[in-house]
Image (cartoon, rainbow, N blue to C red; front, side, top):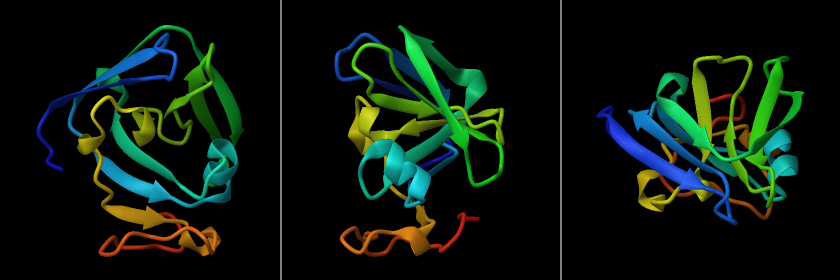
Length: 139
């Protein structure tokens, strides 16, 4: 993953809600926090961060809010029709959008650089070999 500007597109299962990001990928990680596990129904969520200034959404997105690890609201956005998780707009980082990698049109754009909150990782879920792991938030 480079800091070069790229066009990132993705959307939901039913195709009603689409997004586009123009700009570099700021980070890509695997999050094993309990909030991500509960929100996704799985052991971790693959996330990539982009600048909010280059991010647009077409179609209905609904926000779900819960208190995140920062103590501020973690906002997860999903399709209003099929409820696919698409992206996050965390209040702790107002200039950032976190894209859920499973919603990408081109899954090759995601390569995890690190794993975070591994202290709450489920025993049946693993961190890929060679990916630096952090028990708390990744630096």
